[in-house]
Amino acid sequence: MFESLRILITRIFAAVLIVLILVSSSVLNEKAPLISEILSFIGMVMVGICVLGRLWCSLFIAGKKTDHLIDQGPYSLCRNPLYFFSFLGAMGIGFATGTFTIPALVLLAFSAYYSVVMKSEEVKLMEIHGSAFVRYKNTVPLFFPDPTRFSEPELYLVKTKIFRRHLLEVIWFIVLLGFLEFLKALHRADILPTLFALY
Image 1 (spheres, one colour):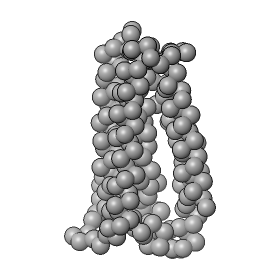
Image 2 (tube, helix red, strand yellow; image 1 turned 90 degrees about the vertical axis):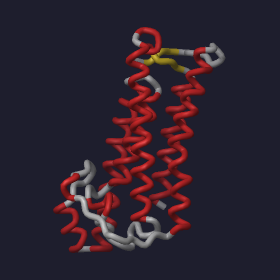
Image 3 (cartoon, helix red, strand yellow; image 1 turned 120 degrees about the vertical axis):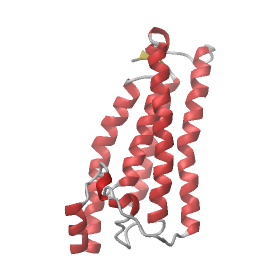
């Protein structure tokens, strides 16, 4: 139930942002095109890291998200690597608009919403795993990865059907990047109206 609600809220927020992008343009495109292009490039790199990172996380949690306490691979770096990489992807999409406004909105929304989500999930993990989760929580950072903590097994069993579903989920980040470039072209051709400009 909670997972479905989380996905729904994320999709609603994404839809609102898309509408905002549809009717706006970047001031930087005209006044500082180099900065706009640099932001777009940074956004693309962040989305690339997001896609690879989410796939890496999916290898470790495919079908095991709450039943097993995963503390290897990306989960040895921080307790919420999937959300960390999703954050990079969302910020990357924001920067790909060539504005500072959209990534700022993403940062505010992500910080407010996912801090609640992570706390809620930790309560559930505490109920399931007890003292094992307490030890994990006391040694591994919540959100920002600590590379010095990295550990991984030599072999790892993956549920391929679930991992394949995760492959489809990360494609949306790449599709959104392409969609943003298409919208920029429509604005440049004056096919889409620009009701206001964003910095």
